Length: 219
Ligand code: DX5
Ligand code: ZN
View 1 (spheres, rainbow, N blue to C red):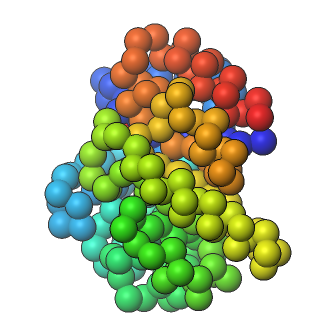
View 2: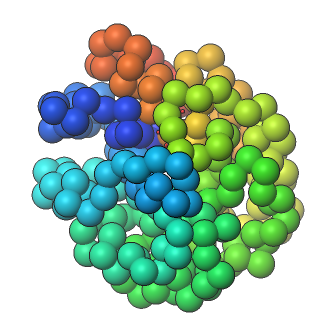
């Protein structure tokens, strides 16, 4: 069964608790939390104090996506703020293995993230250190962009590699996912579907979440 990870980047931050309640009530188990530093990506978002508040509020799985340069500087801080999964970008650091080992030492789940133009072969040596690969299907930095179709080929290639090498990592996709393309990415091999604007900005949150859950978690 695939999982839905709503991206809080598109939430209404004045009603965050209420919106998390709605998601939980609908059976959502993951929350995707986007951290941007204005350097690795041309935008700034939310960070440690907000994550701490969410951690104190819910036991849902907090999937933290670090779009920051040299994430090694902040692994301990995000772990103690309550992250469960910590995603770092392949291009953001040279200290991949050190970071993944540290994340594990802290009892958290390490993940590597690739951008649409990253050659997926580049991360093959890292697969033994991570439990998840996050495939970006838009250029990171902003919600509400259109899905880049070539990311589907990356997902298929990674899923085939995972099968042929008998590996176990999850594949997550992030960017431009909506009710029309969610089923297709799952068929291609995605386990965790991130969706921001299509969950939070398309009318009633409960109804929209129901529709997503019907596609994603009933498969
Ligand atoms: C973009 C972020 C995404 C973003 C997705 O850089 O990583 O998680 O919130 O938003 P949508 O689903 O609107 O493309
Ligand atoms: Zn994200």
